Amino acid sequence: MTAPADIATLSYEQARDELVRVVSALEQGSSTLEESLALWERGEELAQRCEEWLIGAKARLDAARARQLDSASPSTGPSAE
Image (cartoon, rainbow, N blue to C red):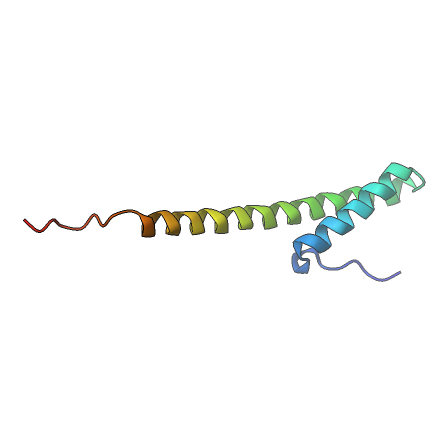
């Protein structure tokens, strides 16, 4: 069996897909207690990685929306009186 990928290097899709496999393996219930614990720990790490990606994506969307709002609002510079 190959060593599991370093979670920090996984894309969102890779982490999500592996998390689905981990959950499926745990649901089958055919693993030993030690294997189940290792799967659970890996699943927790994968879930955290997915959450990091989603938080980052939300921050990027929020920043894009803020830029869009800034460019759409009238200038608030000094008035020419």
